[in-house]
Image (cartoon, rainbow, N blue to C red; front, top):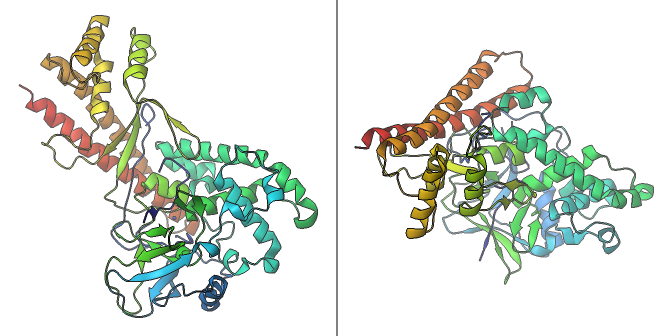
Length: 472
């Protein structure tokens, strides 16, 4: 029984528990990215949102449509964080708390054939599913999915970074999220242009669809859809479950039973809010794709991108070696490529251990960068041929050279930490009771992101310094 994780639109907190409809209060030489989970409840209340959903009638409607029981253990209620699911009776660990048949899940297959024929094969399932949402929204009461579609967040109710203005994005300019936000908006615009013929086809009967409409629909899909081997699915009712990054409960798909289900990972008392884990997502992914962050997370990680200095006399030779020996570029689900010089750092929990969390490939990259002669690079190639074939994975025999390579990384991390601290200081100094609620929320999201990046970098920098000090 494979699990379904919510599929972020990239690679991979306002605070802990957020409504799954995402009604949350959801350095220059190096680019940063990290992963988070949640621990403490949020301290900021949600925005005053328009609620068009019939909470009392939603589950009966869905069960009539499915022709089966979806859940006898849960009811829809509201917390200070938005719409939520609560235990209607005592739930025990291992109980199946909800079961949604495939027949009442919304997928790209819901597109009519005549619509699909107008869409290029280059357009992915996120965009296709967004079109389904747009059409059902236009149909209004005439849509068979109206009770579900009316529950989706309205425009202006999401905090995903693609909805931030330039001033707000300036708060995270030092993070890779800034550029990924720009990339994501560009990709959505590209998809919009590709599917414009389909929109024009429906202009007479349903009216116009704007880029703003499409971007909002794509964001709904990116933050709500669950991935499986069959693609993406919007799963009504499961959408109401809030996220807890340390929960072991996930949405699982069972192709034999033709349904998606959730098994409780712990006991719940009657009236207690029920939680699942959307996935092991970074704060960068959470704020970009879901519109919230969490203040601390066991999945914290930072993605760093290193470049060979243009003025390096050995630039071309080093670049050739990197392309030959390091992992080739990868492409994420939105089509963005991550180059061979991108590395993911996790928290290094032991300052004097083996440096688990700091990639060996990153340390190898630093050794390559620290070489000053072609002979040194050739020696690394010869060593790789005589050992396991991996370039620069072994420490330099020259201790001073080994220290130099690692201090170079430590120096870069230290500079990034100082820049991050300055950015946080700037955020703190501009806090004011007069801030609008939207800006206050996004400022806190930016702070969560930056604090997490700094925590990871500090753990890695400390280990590097101890490593250098421990060398004979």
